[in-house]
Length: 354
Image (cartoon, rainbow, N blue to C red; front, side, top):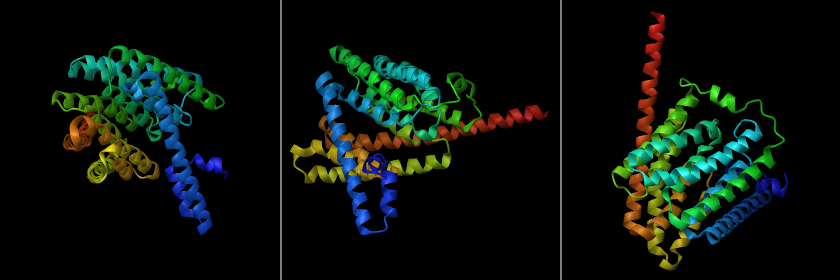
């Protein structure tokens, strides 16, 4: 494996190489490549988001984050169907992420919930057909980030331009990287494969319904940063219940541990470098292959931003409350939904038997 090829590995792949190293020299080499990869990735991410902030305003730096996320994911991930149709779907997804979160913020929480359900239905049914590729962690996360950091007036006009540029870049990279692949399925197949009795479709429906409901409840309760609850719910909803239980536990424990670590750093470090705690969290995420540790370090960046607005105590309280509420509600929602679907199936079997 070349140096460049090793740089392309994810955290789990790099750590697997480290584990399999037979000599100290080999282990030190793989560790060096791993650290170089993290440094290069962080530098590129910082540069990319900074460019978007300069071009479209600091309030639209989140656009740079969303575009960067899409570029890094879809250069390798696909939608499982014909490349040309997938490229058009990606362009549609960018339109949805640009328009729908902004409109939903203009409505009441209930009307906004209905619009969010419609928007997520398109993103998830056509963009997250394979749950194990975790495209929902890109598309739904991007949607929620743009929802949570909404802008108006001139800033929104700049956001339109930034998202248009992001769509063009993502579609170009996606088509270039996937154009030579052969797919047996197309858009029509995705529609035909919708089956309310399958675990995949039930998982999709839970994502489509639960995440907007969580946002709506958080807003009706006047909780700031409602998107945190939505993101927590999105990350916890998986096709298999045992995996959901694992995610819920790790998300709660990881966020509490992250809050404690952030609070310690907040008091130990001078106020002039508080903003860099988020970067420290990014490094931690880069070094983490397990979901629990990623939840710990993801907390740093979120709290570093929120603490400027709500103060340390307010940001910490919001983070814990929103995340616990999001994952617990998602688990309860899915348990009830799956129970209801199983009862419905049993009743249908009984009717046919009679």
